Image (cartoon, rainbow, N blue to C red; front, top):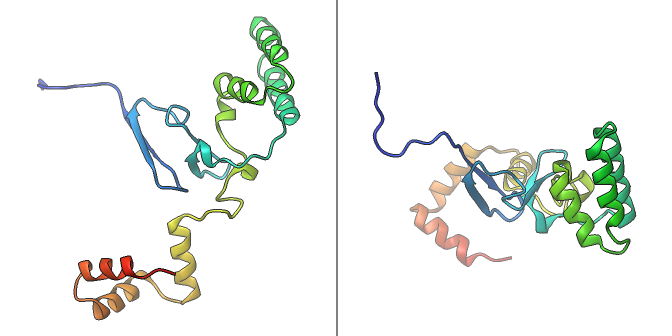
Length: 166
């Protein structure tokens, strides 16, 4: 029989990285909403503040109502949530978004139209690398070989990157 000494936990650590700005958030049993991040329908993860605004208040209200009606087949929850939705004032977009994000996890996600990556306003470094590899018909090994010929050390390379601005 094995006996563990020290800290033992059944919780799992989770971390998320924004594919737009690179910020990282981690914690125990954490979800995207606790990390203040969202994921688009194509799987890009990014901070909520990078989410593009595309949805009018009326469209969001309709989506929430359709979600409630489609996911709560009659009963107390359906009635309760529809009543809460009706109580949110027409021009209170912030409260409407809060309602959507807190009651319906699907609204913590982003549509393709709200994703800065899908809308080509931001690119992930891996996508830029793939583009450059294809454009210059090269691969990582060839680039490393070229860098070794051009720079004496990694430190020299990093210094060159700091100086180079365009």
